[in-house]
Amino acid sequence: MFWQWPLRSPGRLAFTVVVLGALVFGLVYLGGSVGGGNTGGGGVTGGGQGDRWDSGGSGVSATPTPTRLPPVAPLTPEQLPVDQAAPQALEAARVWTSAWVNHPEGTTAQQWLAGLRPYTTDEFLGVLAGVDPANVPASRVTGPVVPTRASPKSVEVTVPTDTVRLKVLVIDTDVGWRVSRYERE
Image (tube, rainbow, N blue to C red; front, side, top):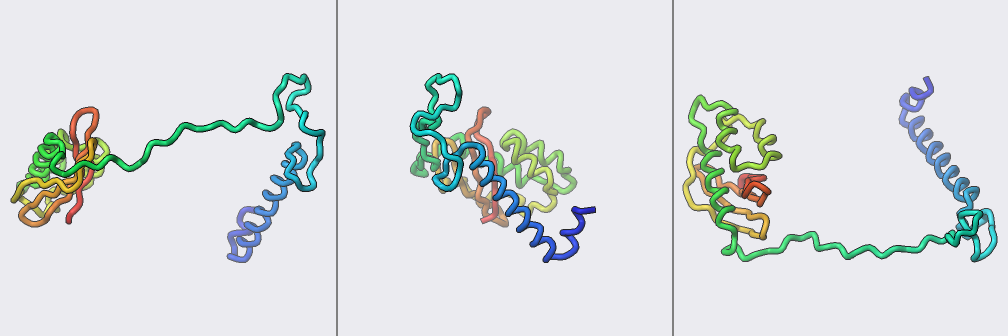
């Protein structure tokens, strides 16, 4: 089998990659010359300014007219002062964290997830499905939810528990504010 030959040694693999690269480069260069692309090099030369793509002379010039794209909106979200964080986001983070620490002995993963579901994005719920609630170190929330960053559509908060401080990201979805991420601080 030909495809096995390059895999028998690193030298053969490197040689094969170089040969294939040269082949592709040659075909692209040759294709540009034969296809009528005038690169200024030794390609096929045609007439002058009046070249047409079609032989009917419909007025379509060989040189495409550049188009102007609309401006792109900035990708960074608008920052708000933390005291302007949405109260619904803070409440969602508080209730979610209370559900996160609620895992008495014998709680199944399905029961624990059912408590988190109303306050969690579907995507993050899939991530949490792999968590065993017995591995959650905290058992109670010990302080208030404190916003650390805010924007119109997302709020990051910290929430103290009896063992760790959580950093929770809450986002505004079509169905309300939901937790999309957490990490231990």
